[in-house]
Amino acid sequence: MLKKLFGNALTDLGNLEGDYRVSQLQTDISQGILYMSIVGISNLALLYVDAILFSERLNPFLWMVVYRVGYVLVTALLGVLMKRTTRVRSFDRLMSGWILFTIVFLLLINFTRPVNYMMSAIDTLVPFVIYVLSPLMIQKTAALALAFSTGTIIIGVAFKTGIDPLVLNVAIIGQIISHMLGWVSNLQIQTYRRKSYQAFIDEKDAKEMVAYLANIDPLTKSLTRRQFMNIAESEFRRFLRYRRPLSILILDADRFKGINDAYGHHAGDLVLRSLSLIAMEHKRAQDTFGRLGGEEFGLIMPETALEQAVIVAERIRRIWEESPVKLDEELIRSTMSIGVAEAVSTDQSLEDLLRRADRMLYKAKEQGRNCVVAE
Image 1 (tube, rainbow, N blue to C red):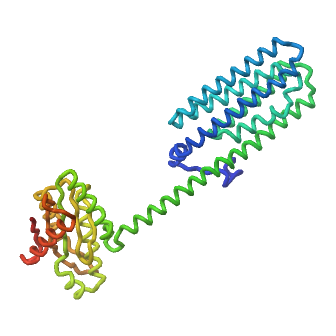
Image 2: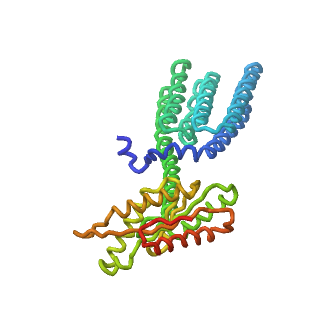
Image 3: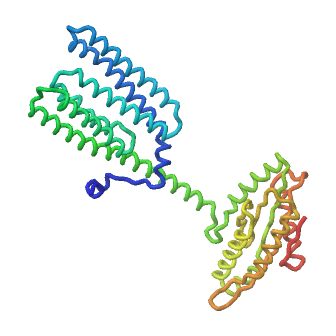
């Protein structure tokens, strides 16, 4: 019923709710401390009202001074704890505790007020202020606001005598209106914040998707040459710094032009896509695979010596040889040649390593194709 009534006013972030609260934590803390400061200063300012109410009674006034100063000190302590917190759950507990503490403080103040003082605008506005300023979930906020209204009315009815029934009814209606307006306002404020966060996440995801697509070859779904070379350069710099093993494979589809001539470019595209998918499926998780151009691909293998790289290359070559591509009712068989090289101390740049791997690839071609040659 409530969801139907407010419709778009309710926004459910689902699994993002936790991330949203964490992202808003510092803002909530800053706002919470601001609210505490305002309420604390206002509380001290009301000593002027106390001085008027207790103008002829010094002791009650002094007790009010102690009472209000004590509230400010407790509020300051909670503010310090809130500023130091780094967890949403801790913040929620501190904020809930402070609001509840403030409610109890205000309710106890009511015992010192004249009979009809409960009808003041302050008591009517308190629930609305709780709804508007509270960063807590709507259920907790509503419970706190209702606790104040219930306590105020109970104090007025059960502990004070001589209240005008008409004034009491007006006060109750005012409390109801304050809750209704506060509820709607809280929904609008919290939903606006959540929709803003959702829009931020959507924009971030869109940018990441654009960046991802810019780095992916649309035909083979492997990395583009530019992205592959960026990663390869990074791995080579790591090799130069730490002298950890690094190998690279250059893979090339054999007689690819013949496939295009015999079956058409659509078949050639299908072969390249299948080759890429098989290579990516059977490489190791830490390896990086990309298309260097045409029917030539590269595989970067960090933390891998030459012997291990040759084993991986042989596995990919054999699986590809045993995986013909089906086009309509016809099977297109293809093989690949692979050149393998391991980075050595004499390599001064990534180009040196690539050049040696490329030279091994040409040797594989010269030796009849469908083989792995390593240096």
